[in-house]
Length: 80
Image (cartoon, rainbow, N blue to C red; front, side):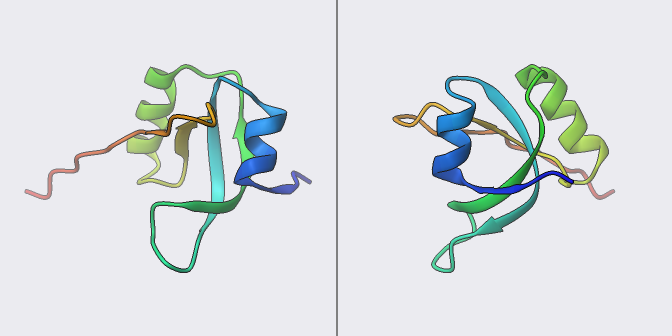
């Protein structure tokens, strides 16, 4: 069973790479800062994670782990 890690632990364990996260728990003060998550993918590119995020309705969250920079994948969804 995959383990839940804090964002800091994820950054330390998987430095400078894209990770696909599931079961994301955000800090109580906002819905953008990750408190903890389960790492599901570490071998995917940004493009692959973006596509997975779209296909799973946001179940997979792609993030880059560089501590000084936060890159979040954005998804635009059309309801028409």
